[in-house]
Length: 265
Image 1: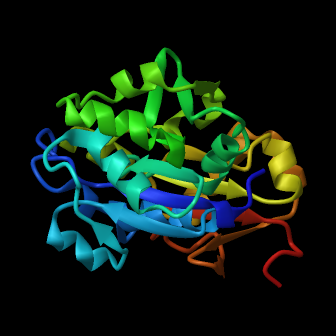
Image 2: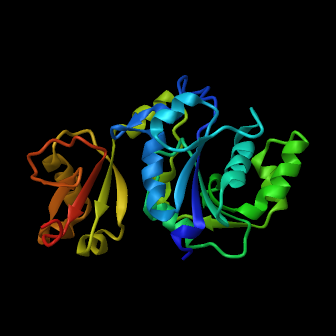
């Protein structure tokens, strides 16, 4: 695994959000903007995080922002701008429209780093070059394309050494793109549930998304007990916002953790 000191996090937030009708980067999810939610997912894995956007309103995120070097030239230009300002060999690029992304999934991506110029995910038949690991050495090819008014990311990938990693199906939802109001409404009904210790062994995953229309931790617990009957035999506690809560508590965030009794005191 590459050490975090050798990786820069680059968030792309320069799109026009035409289908959403409002700035996607500033949409609120789990009491934070999409930009800040994604920054939280990237931060544990990188040396520093930068934001590529020509919108001054994005300065409210508190993340160092850089204007596109090639204005109005799409995500390829944004990737180039991030690589230009980066001081590390490896660069974790994530677009601002995947607010469900998690460090777990991004760590899997980084774990596949090798001699390739780019490491990207594949979900079903779709590749995801905007959730990918780019080497700074990609710059000359991308620059040449942009100089020739070529804005398509796939044109750059065709000229680079790209490694494509098939992501396990259980993680697909964590890479859901949110580009429309309908998609935004849909994620509001999802709870990210994280499992620790023996609980992760029982569920065979460290985190997942659960469609949840209830209001209390007890209602969520009932869903989990049906899905994972072995949980009935185990002792555990729930936490949200880093605080232990009982089952009568309301679900007030988009993330709940299940902890073994020894965790959290």
